Image (cartoon, rainbow, N blue to C red; front, side, top):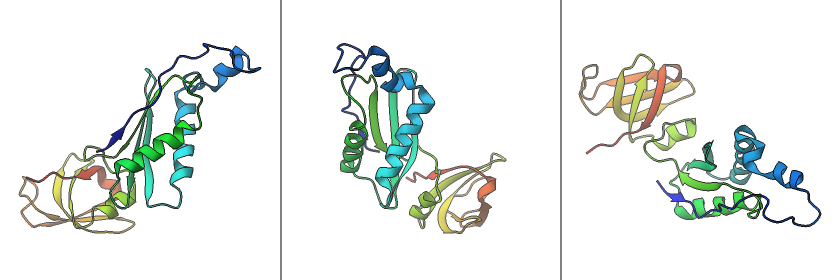
Length: 183
């Protein structure tokens, strides 16, 4: 997982720039806009920036302390340069003198569950770990997928799976799926 977080942390309202009033400056502040509003604004900025590329937004998260975390993924791997460019692009929409938040842009690491069918495609013929709504865990090679679900070829023997057994799961049955770490 790459994390790029060189971003700003400055207090709002130190000087009165131009003809803007304290109220107008406060309306632009991401934290005063509210968590949902800043999240939606960041998502819109990121989706517009990534449109037409092989990269896509996984999530944007805003904490009470002013930490904004953006997670992206791609049909191919994400480079740190991708995170740097996106961070700078997002930053260009905010005034560093007025806005008080910290921005971190990173790739979706192996701990992040899949939220997009494109992530499943990226992991075709690679090991994944799937938890069903019933609490069953399956670990195996993702051998196929379609609009209905996925098929795993078991790599490891568990209480429910035999080694090399094929398991087909509908997307509706999947609670969480993510890359598997195999040693």
